[in-house]
Amino acid sequence: MVKIILVTHGEMAKALLDTAAKICSFEEDTVDVFTVSGKVDLQQISVGIKSKLDSAGTLILVDTFGGTSCNVAASLTHGMDNVTVVCGVNLNMLLAAINNRDKMSPTELAQKVLDDGKKAVINATEKLK
Amino acid sequence: MAIAFARIDNRLIHGQVVEGWLPSTDVSEVVVVSANAASSTLMNKMLRMSLPSGYGLNIFDEKGAAEYLQKHTDGKIFLLLEDFTTLAYLVNNGVKIESVNVGNTKYEEGKKEYGQGIYLSEEEVATVKDLINKNVKFDVRALPSSLSTRLI
Image: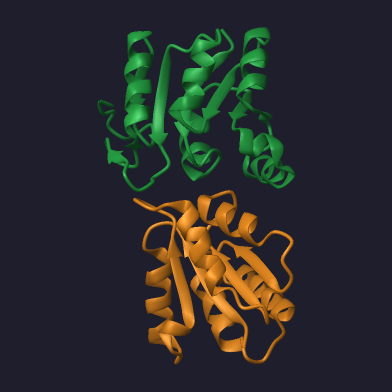
């Protein structure tokens, strides 16, 4: 099973996880969440994320490219095998990750999450015209 | 005067800078001063990728920055520093900086909080006082829309 870690600003990671848990069935404590906002020592966040990495495969979902969440996760895992950092996390991406993490390789899962995330961004008004 | 805007931000180029400050300042180039960033190929790459296209980017250590900023008097520079020690180095080495926006500093145990996201050690407080004596003005706020607060 591919390890999933959420890293975001504010309470977004926790809120996404809480919401996902109301939509699909999984143990919430099997997804780790980290926030990079407020009174946090980024070095400690980095150490915390590192301690949760699974060498068999980890997918780190972060909120925004170029944000601190991404900067911390991407610099920590740079050059590591079997860890992918994907930015722009939305609910569909998290659900795709959770629902497919025991069916796919880490690489396949990362691709699936990217694809589903992009598909989820839709102009509903246009589409329903 | 080439420095159009100066900010202390331990996170360097991130959302508050890209979404908040860059659009509200008239600058053509970002100068990041961080020895760590200057010596790391990875950080160089990440900083460049984080910055919207259309802005120039130069990354220096303190010494390199002091030299560059004194020579480079055209253009409009957004100066981004990771801490007060870096600012003090530049000011004490001939770089003219009148006003500095303070966004956030690194949190470490033992530091005291001086406003949201601003943590200072005793040494840093002394550095700040010295800079104030040298007529550097501080504008403490994360975003242009935030209320400016007093530093110390």
